[in-house]
Length: 567
Image (tube, rainbow, N blue to C red):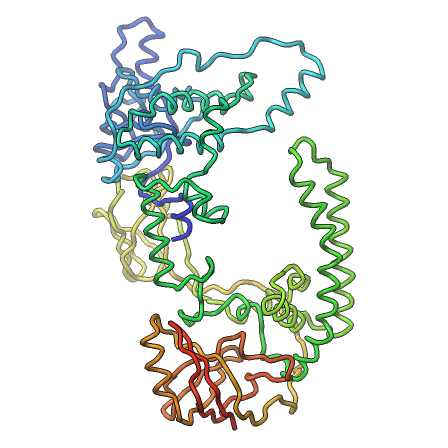
């Protein structure tokens, strides 16, 4: 859902190159009466028929969306054209699509019914100065440098955001035409900004528009973070409405805490659990490594701060002010510091998988700064490998369907034979019914297949021994997760376990469950409660131990706190 909240909405459609009616062009060039092969409101797209919406990106105003009927053309000169949209010469569709000059311009073509129903039949806006260029300048080094520096400054994104601000205002005011002046100006500016490198014009967004639109559209909260009040919270914008409803659903369903997902309610792995492999080392050794490496961790963080500050200052410079020597010097400082502390850690423990587990424990549990853990990136990858899902989503191009009119149809595969639209051909994929995705005349299908990632793993000796942190714990206070969504449900579980003797079950050296005599899980001990460094205690050593709940202290929506006795 997160990509959608960021504005990346998947729809069924394809990008095609734009071109004019070539027959009409040749008729004009030959001084014949210009008729072309297409009529008003028609277009030719090989394999597509029916009404389609066309628009380009960035889209700044509703006047730039076109709706055309895709028709089949049997003219021998153009019927084989593929991956292009042939536009008619009888209306202003090309001007409507941002006055494209068909030099490689593309447009999104879709027959999505929601988009088609939303297309507004509005007049085409034309800027007579759209292709105007700057006055000529002398051909010398100063002019070349000035042009290069200017090309590094791009206002395309900002212009789009300012335009969205005024579009949202129009929706709030209940009349799309109420802000058509601002939107039209920004539409012209958008075209000039995009072409500024070619035409040499100096383009700036008028201060009165730029200053008013200081708040970015609300969906940028999911891109840049921050508080809701920092963004334009329009209640009439359809996309804002979607973001607000989706955000509330996520908060209510997944119990967001300060903008972060409460993963314990889902019973899923945290990032820390995925980056660690606790099965390779005994817990006393692990706790010993934690004590030895933590001072290196804190010293590393102190030394990296001034380098981070230099990097931040460098990143804040304009692109043309950033020199390679400074960039290389900062990178060299990072590399030196990483190598220095990596070497010191290897003197304590030579195995990167274990070092990665130790560094991740320190970073994610105590300090919440993570770069140190990635000194041992090969160890992190080795640990991730232990939790790999070998079933991968494969995408395969179906060459036999290229340029065929099978959009919207399903491909049926049985015993290596694919069938679609009365055609059969061999295709060696798992049996099933597949939807097809078209991209520029090519058709693709997706399916699940077993495939392991190639990751180099170490052949380290076992670091498990007879030593353990296991011992009797009396009147010990722990927090327990119930994996429930309401305080009432959690209270029922707390009441159920109170006074009972249950059993601790360690699963895959990652999870600590509390189960009854039938092996049914009652609750879990969250990962941040598993290791108590100050007491030299790790519940990963307590598999099979008896736990008795003496007192229930506090119950929340998804957890409770209790005093227990562990034998």
